Length: 246
Image (tube, rainbow, N blue to C red; front, side, top):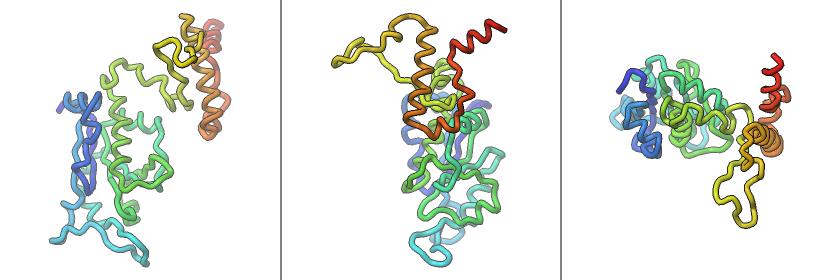
């Protein structure tokens, strides 16, 4: 393991789920090369009783079980080293590409995976934990969500995607969804690649891509468009003209 290795430590009841799909393809090669590391630790190992109990019934009644604060805290305290601690929960703040970039530029993260009805609320009152959601839906547990966070971060690590600029024009990098892509054959089932993309005019291509990103964001993701704002919709040609004038 190199000194610059980005490290993910996952606290889970199912450590065998890691690294999952991240053991294959570009993430898998980066893992084998030591660019990043993955440690999956079983929360159950920190239970104090002989039955290794990690949960109990909800105070006040109700269905399901709740992960105990004392057991979760013990697992967190055992691995705490200054890296941010993320708890995967539908109550959390939605994960953004900006936050992913911040995490990827740091030393890594400790990721806490919930199960059952979630965590005893007191764990968030006594430990510095960032609650994170990957969407407005419910999963069986936080493991899949943890893999999403890891996937999003690992692909941004130096050398993982190849060219340093590979991710610059992707969806959400600049508050917009990405423009459409095309490749061979030039015509398929009566549909041709847009002429501008075959023109060789890089300025026109850049303008077309920017315009499609804006139009598609406004149509498909009005929530992103409202957040993006009209003050950032300059086309590449506008930017180039401004630089010439300066």
